[in-house]
Picture 1: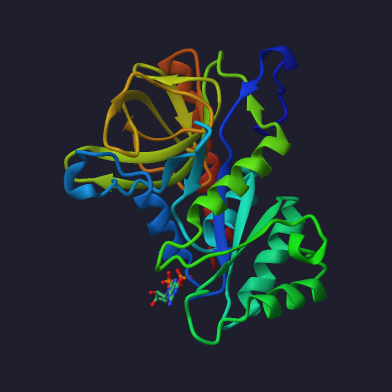
Picture 2: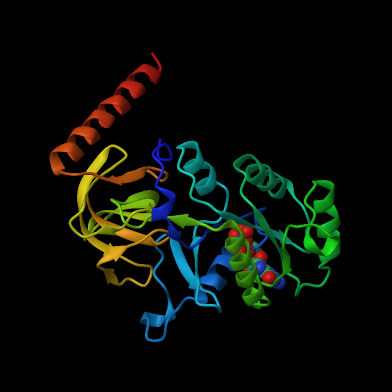
Length: 297
Ligand code: GDP
């Protein structure tokens, strides 16, 4: 398990929080992720659009950084957790103020509880007629989510993803929550990262977007990821820029994989290519075995 071997507390340095967006369908998860990604666009970037690589970073007013998983919904979150690779530090629970608590809202609350991940409630669509944020807070209370405005400790913020209202406030609240959590990792060791998404790219071969959990990933590193192996040919950030190295909390695209891994697979840097291939082929065998035994007769 990725968490078994702990780093010496003396080696730990602060790292950015990783944030996922959850909530009921049509409550505005994609709109919010798009709006926040827009805050991240730098002058001169092609068409003012950041690359979609499955995760991106946004700067806070104080000069901090927040990493967002750019996959709305519960799949990424649960799939990664099933594989034992927990990446999410904070969840933004999006609730549409005109629609209120719905089945997937309740499901998201349950996921957060089970994973022990703190939530920030974003009451969305406050620009709409019929928006009733207070009713959302009251319904949350029924589910034992007591937001600040009701005297509790769960931060909440009224937003409009469409009109980009109060997004700054949301970012600052995330930063505050992260500060309380004192998130840290050891950057001075071989890298360990989690696959957020991966695909076969026509020109570039197998490409994986990974989130660095600890250590530093650099060009030339030899690694195992799921049942694949490889040697890092390039490390690319969410602006499409090639980097020399990636540190904890950063989402980056990695080139140089033998094949396409699955979301939730853990990428581990190992000492040499022989070792990498050994581990990968052993895992492939295990996968094939599991497949044969599970196959219907
Ligand atoms: P998702 O299914 O949760 O990802 O929801 P989407 O982001 O796709 O949004 C669903 C619909 O709600 C779209 O038509 C959006 O334009 C609209 N929407 C999202 N946020 C807002 C908002 O703040 N105000 C208003 N009026 N509409 C919004």
